[in-house]
Image (cartoon, rainbow, N blue to C red; front, side, top):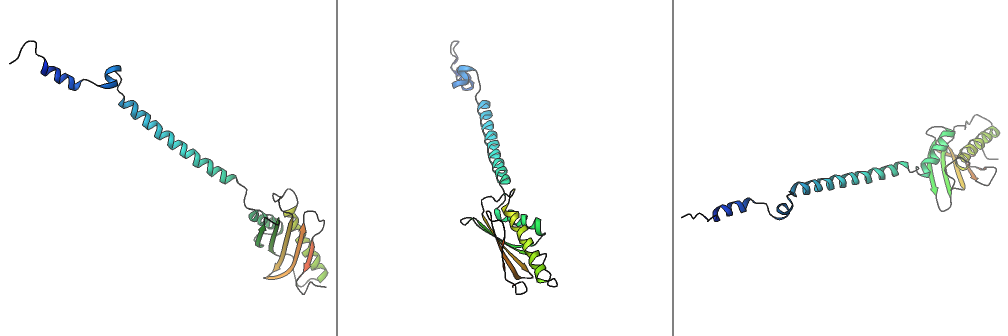
Length: 176
């Protein structure tokens, strides 16, 4: 039976639909705000991760190449392409050892001419590494081994404070 002042069923129905908590107090629905904040945080974190990866890649790209690569390029620029056979760097002794194929050795030439040509070739190769504007300022000594068809012709030693390159003739055709 229904009484005129009995609103219990209607009140219960309205109470189930009525907003609760912050929405009831302020009239603001927080669900879209929370979703927006979460999406903004995810996008910001993604952009931050991308920026960190990009900066690391840029730092790696801007690093100078290894001394072995620089020495190889300097000698090949002076002597000829694909002439360098081996490059060894000793950072403790501040020394570089380069082995390259001689482009000037011709067994038909006289010994004096061959020695002069090989001396000039070794001087050019070693001074390319030692003298400015070479980026290999940290190294004081260069040893250049001149080879032809796998046989060692001469060994040249140069240092930053020496005026001349010291040649040691290994091949029998070049010895005194």
